[in-house]
Image 1 (cartoon, each protein chain N blue to C red):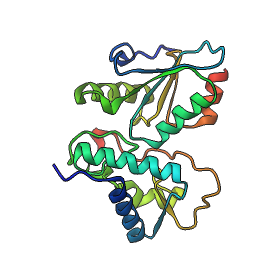
Image 2 (cartoon, each protein chain N blue to C red):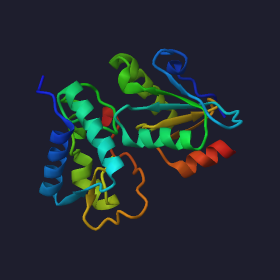
Image 3 (cartoon, one colour):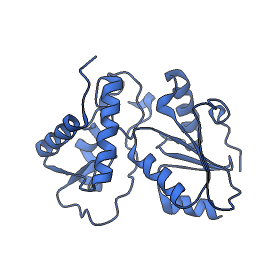
Length: 113
Length: 109
């Protein structure tokens, strides 16, 4: 099992991911903290950054498409909806003063992955 | 409308959290949620702030095999991948995901 992560380390990780993908992070601190703590919990339980808003199969291989940043954020969601499924990562032009809502689940059913 | 039958709503009593409401609500509200999920936190807060009495089960806290069974049952209801939080009202109406305007409509029908 990997060494346990702290909230600070997770915040640094997501900041790095946002920068690398030319995204911005959720600027609402209560949301960002909730997501960071979800990632801390998942990493420290599973050993990888399973998406905090999707349930895990508790198997890195089966969960590989939803390891943060998930495949769906990178391939389509941020571009199409302005943010990822969890509302952690946003496109730069997304207006953060407006409503932030859940987006449709793009992940296929297990038998179709 | 067919009843929503999910065994886990009757089992795992020790893992189901019950939150008291402040109104004269009759409807039974049950949430399947994840302890790590922001939308689930927002959903729980929305219900509490609006005075609803509800119960929830964080499915990431139960054993894998049982959890997978719940997800399969939810997928059968929706016909697609369930989103958390998954709300069930009076064991009849359901909605997959946190959308307060939809929840409000369901609860006021």
